[in-house]
Length: 156
Ligand code: SF4
Ligand code: SF4
Image (cartoon, rainbow, N blue to C red; front, side, top):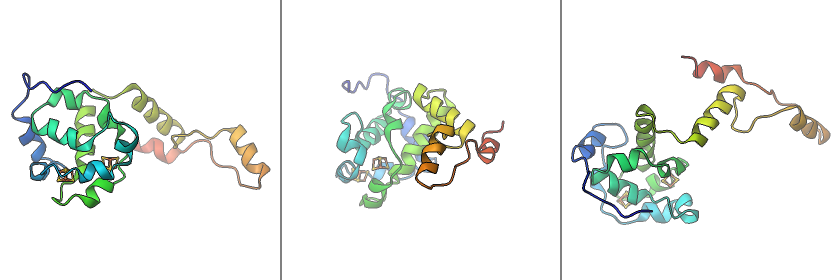
């Protein structure tokens, strides 16, 4: 990851975040790194570090955070949030950042593709006749290949 450059920092970003659900407590972070030690994604990918994202946000690095692809690596497992001694809602903060990124049009191609699969099939892994044949061979029932209920959620 590139070094942090504060030249174009947005001093209002911290306040903007603190006023929204998920961002209320980020200023209470005292950099204990419990969230980093608890994070299964940080354990396998050094591009992802929840504390670093929080610090970047507090420094006002709006563009670097919202236009990044690393915020999308958070799996929303809540391990960090359950353990944070300062009660920072870290998982919800990551969701807030993702929602803000979507509103500003910064969504990685892979995430957009996943959305289309969920919208069309109701699952991230689409089930087809080949999958159902394999299931039937081991006496498992067929699964539906589409999910109309999910389509309703995406209706515009
Ligand atoms: S666990 Fe909480 S207080 Fe500790 S570094 Fe992470 S966000 Fe900050
Ligand atoms: S919720 Fe996200 S940041 Fe927190 S531990 Fe899980 S993957 Fe890491």
